[in-house]
Amino acid sequence: MGFVTGLQCRECGRKYNIEPIYVCEFCFGPLEVVYDYQAIKKVVSRKTIEGRAENLWRYKELMPIEGEPQVGLNSGFTPLIKAENLAKIFGVKELYIKDDTVAHPTLSFKDRVVAVALTKAKEFGFDTVACASTGNLAHSVSAHGAKAGFKRFIFIPATLEATKIVASLVFKPNLIAVDGNYDDVNRLCSEIANKYNWAFVNINIRPFYAEGSKTIGFEVAEQLGWKAPDNVIVPCASGSLLTKIWKAFKEFREVGILDEANPKIFAAQAMGCNPIVTAIKNNTDVIRPIKPDTVAKSLAIGNPADGFYACRVVKESGGYGEEVTDDEIVEGIKLLARTEGIFAETAGGVTVAVTRKLIEKGYIDKDEVTVICVTGNGMKTQEALQGKVAEPHHIKPNLASFEEILNKL
Ligand SMILES: *Cc1c(COP(=O)(O)O)cnc(C)c1O
Figure 1 (cartoon, protein in one colour):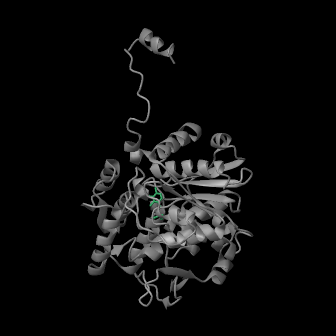
Figure 2 (cartoon, protein in one colour):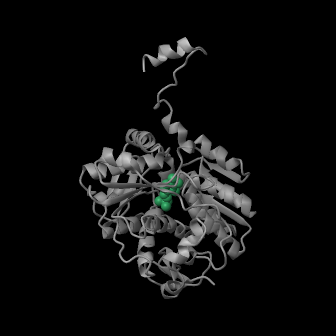
Figure 3 (cartoon, rainbow, N blue to C red):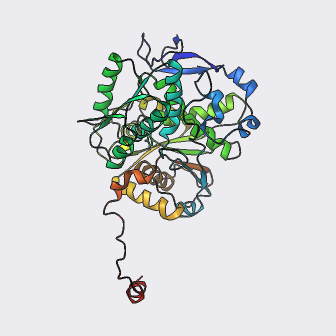
């Protein structure tokens, strides 16, 4: 029923059957899903897609599942907001926010990857799902896994934002807070994944999971009236999202939905966790792992699994990378809020602030169409704004007290 022909090693090209595996046995390269684009071309068109429900499964032929979607039927197709106020401040003609702060049950783009991973876990017959998370994945696997009836083991760094911990716990998963950073958590999870027969969404199910990120690219193309933008600014943790947005535009061209697709892809990171951007700036694809220290915890992966491929996509597409300080991240969150009415989490502060820098430095042409990916909701990372927003005006419950304040404003 599906259009996946198998898995293939990105390095040596060796082919594998569709199984919960993620690494080539021979060269240790990562495995990627391969589709039969000729067959897909015959069954999808702009019209078939437009006639479907407004969720991330409207592009299901280009998703790595065999049967019907089972998870995430209420996720995705988030708004593409024309950001006219922000465009004025940045001095550019056409600017959009791909707003993944809304239209996902757990308020981040991770609902896209989890919808695919858990549908695939069902198809493989797993009863337990697990993940190593920087926060949003924990929230999303906890929620969607509850509805889908999975046992859940969720591993997080113990220092995560309080809101993300509560937002996960309410769904009653087994939440394991590890004394270490994300890279420590991920290393531990690889060991656990080898021993227990669980669907680790971002380890042994990773080739399938990662494909869910393509839906941002598909949606952007559709929402722009079936064309690719000139520039896309993407936040990077492992680098997977960035590579998959690029893949989405290429696939849409491959199956005849877009005539042209040559967007420049830009990587956005925090200065306190910048291994991908550093490699891009040094014009290399060798990633040097670092120890993260930034308010942008959702992006705090010091040893990014897809960093090498993210660098390659940025280079091939003609994009670049830029990094911002924690203060610039907070300023980015506040700027987006007061211009466009969107409350983004720290990762959104990163992309907005990075976009500003890229425009100022001339890497983004002011006459081109630019899309900023805002991937998570600010309600989940309120700590980042503690002491960084104004206090409310306190008054007595009478008119005189109010007018005393009013006269000062
Ligand atoms: C996970 C995450 C990303 C980036 O994920 P990749 O690992 O690079 O695919 C971006 N934004 C938010 C809010 C995230 O939670």
